[in-house]
Length: 374
Image (cartoon, rainbow, N blue to C red; front, side, top):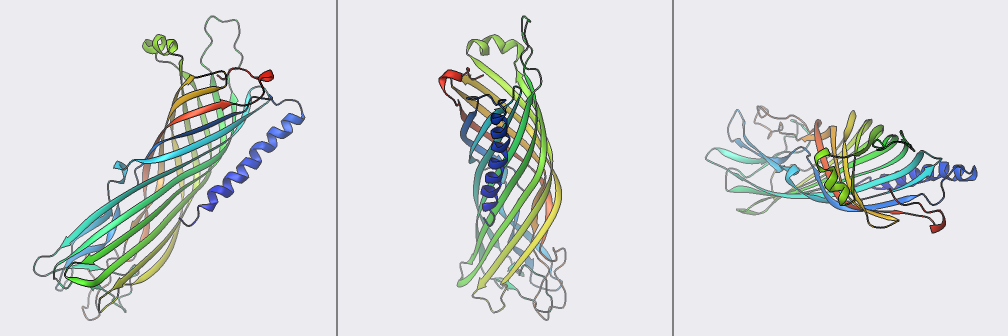
């Protein structure tokens, strides 16, 4: 991935901003010493990104040229399960406010094999990423045999945020049953979806032929969000969960982001009279909404520690979707391919993500000022 260092730079900056207010508050005597909490977790991840078309497709072998079949180098990505790690550190500032630094990293991979078979009068075709009829670059199998394609897709999904949270109903006293605790939060956030795709195409009847396509498609989301949530209980299960020492909470979160996408594609062919080799860089900017729901059920396992199961469900209104050039033909054919995508471009779609993890939360500080972890 080309811009992973953005995560580390963003995290370092957020850490500096997070602990500057806390240090100032401590100097003023308003920070609750020993109240900081650290959480770490790991689990599964799902991300429903758009399918990726193959640079290989099948056409007839006579004028007018018409696309007979298209293929995918990656499909049903939402069925793939990856992994995620996450962590946070929260520091109380005053009585009812806290500042936290939060981050996660998820990785999801998939692979796909596709075969382009030809009938009489058909060819399997690979075209350059750019549309230039004056050059008319083309690589095909001449109607003999087949093209076999193997693709690997690797995606890193990550984020880092700096958040301020306020408790809305602290210290309820003098009631038989206290209402569920509620909180409100504002945060500055950076997200990343970094995609890497590698596709190799071979012709079994022509061992000297190969087409290799490599792609980096990286999107950064810069924005801010608001969140509201708190504890909850299911009435007919509250007796059971309370008896087991379980406590559940929810969080509704939504924000507006500036989405910046960079694409770099490289196609190299060998063993053909006409070359389809090309390289292309594109960019796209958009506005995105990211929102979702967080559910967590926790159990105290000591005075300082709690173990929880946390699930995060999010919707992304914008993710990039690639379409590759299909509109370039051999010199002398006299016409472009009909019903074709002309030129490579970045489109857009939406996506859903889901991350579930087992988290350990530990409260820091000396025993002399320690309060039980809630």
